[in-house]
Image (cartoon, rainbow, N blue to C red; front, top):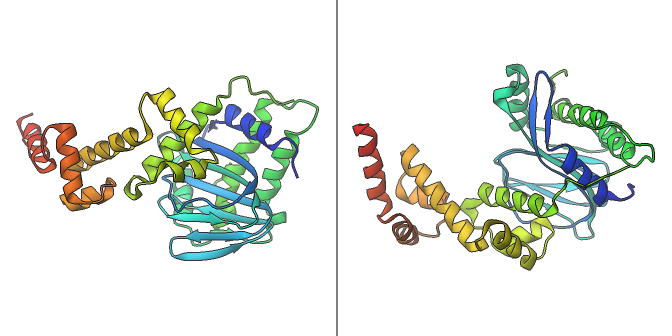
Length: 297
C-alpha cells in the first residue's frame, strides 16, 4: 500500500493538471487515491475515467451491465456511459480522469482514443502484470521516495500511463519530497462538482448525491458554491439548465419536450415556466426570435 495517499493525490493534481508532448495534449480532470471507496451515485462523464482496484471487492455497473470487481482489476468508464461503483466493505481505488485535447493532438492518436471511447473490453482482471498497472504503481512508489524526483519524470510517467490505456483495453495503441504549495483543495473540489453537475444535468443530481460522489459533506459543498461562485447549489443547477436549454434551442431541432428532458426539467410545464421567468419569454418564442435574428444577419 502507499504511504500518505492524500498527499500524493494532492501533488499529482497540482503538478499534472495537463500533459503535453510534441504529438499529444491531455487535460487531466483529477487524480484519485482512495483507500476506502464505497458507493457512488449512478452518473456519467464527458471524459475518460480509468480505475484500478488495489484491494477489496465490489461491483461495477456500466450501462445495463453489472461486473464484479476484485483486487487487481482495471476498469474503464467511457465517455457518455452511465455507470456506478459499489462496494459494501470499501476498496482501495486508484483512478484518473482525462480527455484528449483533439485540436492539439496528432490525428492518429486522436483516432486511437476515439476507439477507446467505444471499446468493448472495459474490465481487465488479474492485471498485476499489465503494463498499465506496472507504470501506475511505479509512478506512485517513486512519489513516496525520500529522494526528490523531478517534475519532468512525473509528467513523463503520467503520459506513458495515459498512452498505455489504449493497448490495455484495445488492440491498437499510439506510440508514444511532496509539496502542495499551489494546490487549492477548494477549487479542485468545486471544479469536480461543476463538471459532474454539467455531465449529469439531465438527471437532476441533488446536492447530497454530488457531495457523496466527491466524498464531501453536503454542508461543505454548499458552502463552496456560496463562497466561490456567490450562489447556492440550487441556483447554479438552475442556471446551467437554462444555459443548456438555450444552447439546444439555438443549435438543434429537438422538440421542446426533448430539450426539457435533456436540460433536466421534470416536465414541459416546469421548463416553460422556469425559462419564461429567466429569459422573459417562453422557449418556443425564444427559438423563433433567435431564428429570425439569424436570418436578418
